[in-house]
Image (cartoon, rainbow, N blue to C red; front, side, top):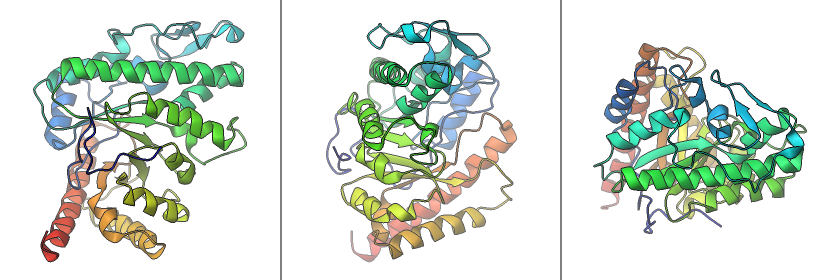
Length: 347
């Protein structure tokens, strides 16, 4: 299963994504939901991402949110969780809160209400099945049970999230990204699944909403990108410098099939500086390496989005504003480059 071609119609997803658009990863530091939603709609109008606000409610952190409603898992108000009997977990047990009406999904609901009349695309993000499975393993669940439960919970929640978006913002095409920090570092010795099972688990989650959204995978560090591309995402979300050059051949084929890359080009874990020159230099160097290893320089730019590297929940609002400013400036540079390419060839 390959990514949907960007030129093909994808029911429920965008026919194509906005050229060089800025978007975000999810979590924000705001203490007011309405303000956070206004922020993403204003600063990333081309492709706003539904935020989560763990500073307001810890249940909006990615693991507690993903565990919510799984029978046999108790999630506390502070986001901590426990499993009374790991052996009793059952992947066939029905997931709770199918309407996404409880606290972990409050900001999602308000975001979708805010975009009720929107006709441009929106981005939604939820915890992926590999990362959720690892959390269950860490809590004592047997490996096979943990990943079966995680797969069932994530696929159900993805369908329910898309259904909620269809009901509340029916005119907005959807990009749905599965967040997989558990895949940072590739197939490590502490990842208790072989590569083919990683692909199966991840592709199952992507396939469950195929035709209703453009699906993607976000990994916040170096990863086995060839393996991730085998799962069939239409969008890869990765930091600049995340060891993708070794997968340049696979990435080139992925781009030729219409796949997009959201480049995490603005750091979220160190000093930024006042200007975008350093971020642009690193992104350009990444693209040069990929071109030298066989990627098409036009496709790299034409099928690119720009994001911060990760979420911004641990920052303050001033820092978040600066990160979003740099992200937009980089997006404008990409847009100008691709527009220039089109003009030069008479497109």
